[in-house]
Image (cartoon, rainbow, N blue to C red):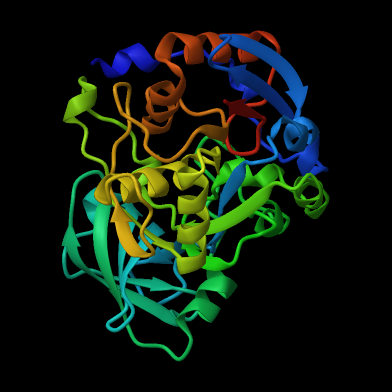
Length: 350
């Protein structure tokens, strides 16, 4: 299977650079697989597209200011400027992280990177991988995350061609985010407001929450020609006893599990594959790579944003709904001037 088969043409002006003033004012492209139809709707319609027996599952991971700007000197000189994206905490003590570092070629094992005006945060490079990947160990501090909150920046994706703004701390975050740990937002959830959530519950639709911390597995680009040759990074997830019981009860009763976002879907399908179609409570590492031919065991419908060409997330959506159907829907979205990517519009596949 060729990576190039998952391509589409997108005018640059359709890449959303700012969020809408109203989260729930996004458009929604409704894909119905059995009828192979497309309908242009608004996200506010989403509660009415749900069935009374559905279980809607959210990813409650919380984005933190994971982009740090540092230097290779303890002084405040701009020389040796370094950009670090913290993608995953590997251990709290010692405080070690998986990270992407730029410029990667200039930062070697043993180098130290200083952050903040006075270098109040410092990390040493322990090892290096391909494409700017590094393992960092931070010097002990009284409150690491408090410092990161003060000096870090919201990790907006590179296709948003502007610096992060104070407003992004709220808008690049779901209203139900609780568990800190993501280096990118689970963007399908950005459309929800407390009002929309209330309308879902008023319709008698049940909801559950799981956690998957978004890291390299979600946004690392594909650099091979054949899909099967790509290796995906693992991402930490957890499922509570209560959530597992809710999901299993829905599956047992043949009720539909609706995943809000590809991260939710990946966590559920990884867990289900490991437990013969059941969902087990606990923590794990989701390294499942979903592309056409995959057999879904847990998720029956998906709410998702539009994804980058030739990306693993687009491949996942194609696995659920069919490559030709999905790419046709993307061409329709381009013609109808939908807004794309993290701050853009969404689609509901059922």
